[in-house]
Image (cartoon, rainbow, N blue to C red):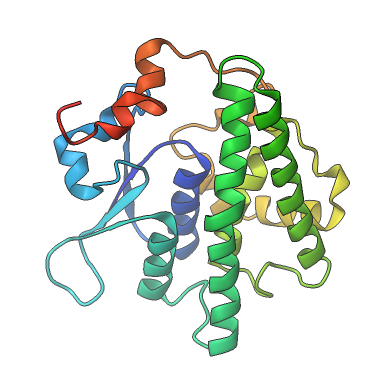
Length: 240
């Protein structure tokens, strides 16, 4: 059994999708990040970086005591190696997958996350920041569009690179980006969307992402702002 400490975000859904794809039993432990549950001493023992998701594997690779893994890329590699699924052992295919996984973790997720922040959360207009990150979000979709004009999936075969990227592409509608401009990417997206494991894993905790209006501001009070983006973030672990 795997404990999945998670929240309904693209990063959270990466891991629930992966768990569904590889058929491992798991228990969902949801967190209210607006209330700051990610700062409890118990959670900080699992992830000192106070970010979700995190898994605790009670039947870990190699046996022994339960094993904790944080950072979504590390979790995806761990689950792939545990099950022998979605990460080839053939060297070139494996490294193709790892390259695109690292691309998602270093580019697609962070840059789209910043676009979401300035469009949906940040107060005021912040026109420079909105344009800067929205343009980068579009550029990265263009990278995927070109790649997916050459291959069916990011690494050739369906892999953890696709699992990592798909939830972030799903979120593009929330920042008013349309896949109509990216036909290869749209084909990839809808092909993956139709997978039963993706439908199940992408709806863990809630599936309200499908219903939220595009570019709608998320109202936050002062305490919620501090918890998600402000002083409480950098004071985590020191009693803040």
